[in-house]
Every structure is written in structure tokens, then in C-alpha cells.
Image 1 (cartoon, rainbow, N blue to C red):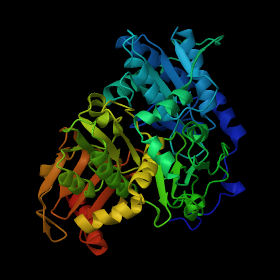
Image 2: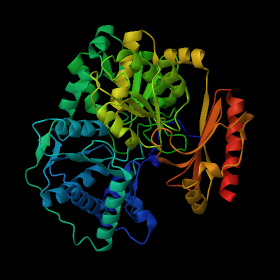
Image 3: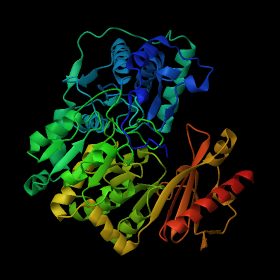
Image 4: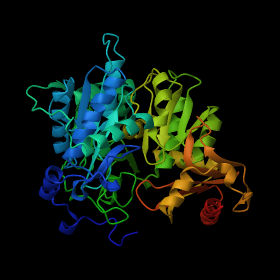
Length: 540
């Protein structure tokens, strides 16, 4: 924990926006340097122009690759294009638009020149593709590095299902983009756009919220809601929601500044718009007693932070458990067999809630893309991950978004408070009385690139340990129970505890997630033994 974590950023912490934008246009990536190549992680290509990882060449080549990819799978409808408030998002938007127009792609940009949250783009794609009047298919590009620091840019492709592209698509796009860069961009088409068609992302998203949230109950309750966009793309959406539904809702901080000078520093001393981090949310937490529900979103509004007067900022795992327990008892229009989706590093409190609801638990690897098919066909009512990302079905059991929706989860917190008369944190306390009070933590352990590669391919059977922190090991997983997809690591389970180990995609460490229903001391024992177990398996 950095000694300045939770304190307001100073001038020395701020990025030079002019230098950042200049680097975007002037610097050229070296394809022989791994860190300067196009690489798609679980949420697209990310990097900074200052280290030549996110520049005009990257975006031009990646957009051309997306044009070719969408043509190869028969997508010939409109492409929705949106961007968040990061400084690099605007020039990347311009680059992408030039390439798309030159390739005769029908592009739809925001009608008011507004920022576009990730969930609004996903919603737009799905609304278009589910309209029987449309005989073509739409897809989209959202330009955002999510909660990453102000120095970063991000670029993500959402295919016609509306959610994050799968590995087959992103690998193809990245490989083609790198080949185009290596060839000097000779096959990249660019043109200055003249007239571009528009789409009202904000109006259509806000108007449709009544199909998924009980807005009448929220209004009737009169509860005081505070919404802090954290300088992100949801800023005008929250004001529109307040006006459209006549809610007692205040936009706590409507400022947008690409340096994010108003943010408090995250745990490592960096500016990071993470609404699940107590350090990043420190300034928001000063208002916790002013509202019945106080919320935060990251820069593209795909993540949520829930603050209550009685408990402050909720742990994301805790709110997911409360949301699931509430939704499956208040959505009679859902398929009675609709499963509960969770990533395998989310809390086992969700497992116990699912069992109490007599619902199938669908446990998948890390990454929201795994929930897409279930949300599309209604077989999964709710999909959530421990990093404060989730979405769920409309009242009638049909799909809303297939990407994470932080605005939606914040509004759900308001509905829960309005309908039950209790805060989500009070409801979580009730869950702990029924099922136990788990302790949960994530730590990093050093690992060489070779060890990380080995861990990614490690089979559960390679683990020879038979006990963990005094309990018999009941499962050693290298594939997710829900869909049998590779974890990219391992998960070890006992009756009252578990740990999962996965390699980091950006640092020479592997991440250990662990939880215990036997208290903090037992959790520390689980974490210590987890490292020994994984290290032994890697050495073997």
C-alpha cells in the first residue's frame, strides 16, 4: 500500500495531456518489441502512447483488421462507435472513423458527440440485431481502457452478440493488425469523413431502463441517491436518468478532466478510476452519510461501486451475493431454470446463495465473455465477476447487455434499498448470519515468464497435495465446472476454503485468490500454503 493511497492527486501525479496526444500521433511502434505490438487481453488492446504501446498506427491497423474480420464472418450492418473520457480516446476515435469510412463501413456515432459507456454500446448492438425489421447484423467498437490510469488508451471490438469478442476473434484481429504494421500500413485505407450517421446512445439506453429496473419503486421511495461518474462516460447518463424518472438523484461530481486531478490515489499511488477500491473512492466516501445509496462508476461505466451509510464501500463480492439473492426472488418473468453465473474467483458466498435459491450455479473462467451465450438465450439470469462487473436480464427474461453494466448495478442497489427498506450492506449481514462470514483476499507472487507459461497450462492433476490449511482437498480444477473451459491456471477447493492461481498478463507475477469461511487467520494459512502448493507443482 502506497503511503499516499487515498489522498488527492497533486500536480506531480498528473499526466501531460499535450505530450500524451503528441506521442499518439508522432511515435511509431517497433513490431520487433513485444510491448509495442497489438495485444488483445480480456478487454481489448490497451497501452500508453508514451511507451509506444497505443498510437495512431496501432488503431489504424486494428480498425482495418476489424473491417476485414467483420467482412469474413458476414457482418455487413452498421458499426456502432463510441469512446470514453480518457485523453487518448478522442484521437483514437478520429483514427478509427477515418479507416471505417474509407472502407465504406456504415458507422454510427453518438448523436450529441457525447461519451459512450460500454454498456450503452452493447445495448445498442443488441437492440439493433433483435429488431425483426433489420436483416443485417451490427457490431461495435468501444474506445476505452476502462479504469486504467489517464496515460492509457484502450480499443475493444464487440461482435454482433454485443459482448467482448472471444479469443478466436481477438487473436485473428491482433495478428492481422501486427502484420499490417509490419508491412508499413500499406493496406490500411484512410479517408476524411464528410457526413457520418448518428445514434442516440444515451436516450435509447435511459428510456429502456424501465424494462429492467423497477423505476417506479425507486421514485416512490424517495430515497436519496448520489451518483459519482468518477469523471467517466456515465456523467450525462446519470443526469438524464434523474430527469427521465424523476428520481431524488444527485450527480455528486459532474467534472470531466482527462488528468483526473480530482481523484484520490489508488492503493499503489496511481490515479485509477476503480469504483471498487476504497483508496480510489476515498473522496466519494466522504459523502456516504449524505445518501441512502451512493455509487461510483469507472471511466467506461462497466464497473460499479456501492456505498451505504452504514458500511461504506461494499466489497464487490458482497454486493454480487446480495444482488443475486434479491433478483432471483423479484424477477418472476425470468426462466425458472435460469442459472446464476459467476467467475471461478468470485466468492463462494454466491454458491451458498445459489443453493438456497435452488438454482444452478454456472461457474466459468475469468472474463465476462463467458456469460454472453447464457445472457443471450436467457439460460443465465445473472452474470458477475469479482472485479465489480455484472449484468442481468430484463424483467421479461430477455437480454439487456452482454457486456458489464455498472450503471445498471448501481440502479439495482437503489431498487433493492427502495423495495426492501434495507441497504445492500444490511442484507449482506443477513446472508452472513445464514451462511457464514467469509474472508477473501488476492495477493501476487513472483513468477518468471516461463513459470507463468507453465501455470497457464498446469493441469489440476499435477497438484500432489491432499490437504489445504487443515482441510481435505475436494477438487483440483484446471477447467471451469460450468462450461469445461480452461481456467488458465488452477483452483483448489476444500469444504470451507479455496484458492485459485492465475498468471498475470502484464507483470512477472501470478495472482492468488483465496477465501475462507473459517476466518482471517485461516485465510492467511490458505494463502501461504497456496503459494507452496503452486510452486511445488511448477517445479515438478
